[in-house]
Length: 378
Image (cartoon, rainbow, N blue to C red):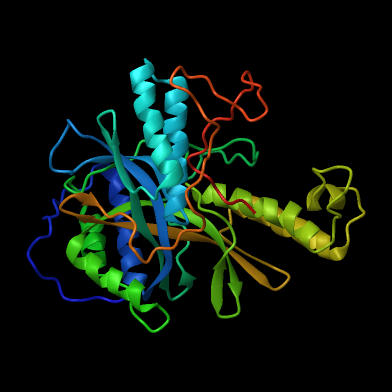
C-alpha cells in the first residue's frame, strides 16, 4: 500500500474527545506504543459484510449498523448471508403475507443477481468492503496488545463461544473518537494499493476509491493465527473476536488437527476426541506427538501469543480492518473484486403463507439457524 497527497476538501472533519477514565487512557497508551513501533503496513486483502440503514431515520447516510459481520472473503459470500438473513426473516418474523412477499422478492433477486444494495420494508441493505491489514514492527507482525479484551477466567471448551464478530456494531464516521483513534484514521485515509504484483484494474479501483470514498472508519480489531513460511507469513485460521478465541483454535490445531495431518493419530481412530494430550497421558505417544501436547499446554499456561513447534512458528496476529466512506456512506464492492461463485439458491422455496417446500416433500423438517458469521476453523 502507498500514500498520496490529500485533496478536494471533501473529507469529514474528525471530532476528537478526551479518553474516558483510566481504562481508556491505558488503551490510548498502548495505541501510541503501537504507532511508534510501526515500521510497515501489511495488507492481506478485502473483507466483505452487510450493513443496514433505516431509510426514514436519517438522510445523510451517517449511521449504519452491521447485520452481516465484515469477514467474508468475497462479495458473493456476503450476498449469500444477506439472502439467508432475509429468508429467515420471512419465515419467522413476517407479520403478514404482504411483508413476507416483499422479503421473498428480495431473496429472489439475491438468488439470481449480484445485488450489492437493496431496500426492503424501509431498511436499506448494502454489501460493504473493508481492507484487512496488520502492522509490522521491530519484532515482526503485531501481536495482541495488553489492553485487548481477554476473559478474566479463560474457558478452553470449544463448545463455548464469545459474542460474535461485529455484534451490535453501529458505524458512524461522525462520532467523536480519542486522539490516537483520530491519528490512525488520518494515517490510513490515503492508503492505496501500489506495486507491480497488483493487476491494473485493481490499482485503478484503489486509486479511484480515494476520491469516491475519501474518509475511513476503523472497525474493531480481530485476531487470527498465522504461520511463518520462510520469510513470509500465511494465514492459518479464520478471524476471531478475541485473542483467546484465536488461541483456542491454535490449541485445537496443535492437539487434534496437526497430529492427524501428520499421521501421528489416524483420521479413522475410534475415539474421535483422541488428541495429543489424551494419547500422551496414556503413555503411548511418540516423541513428536508429545511435543505437540507440551506446546499446547504451554499455550494455555502462559496465554502465549507465539509458539514454535518442530520448526514452525505459530502466532496470534492482531488484524485491523479499514472501511472507506463516501458522501453516500460505506464503500461497496469494487469492479475488480472477484467472486468465488455465482448467485444461487441458498434456502428452499417458500410461499407467501410461510410454507417451506423442501425437495423431499417433508415440510415439517426443521431448518438450521442462519449462519451470518462463518469462521474458518482449523
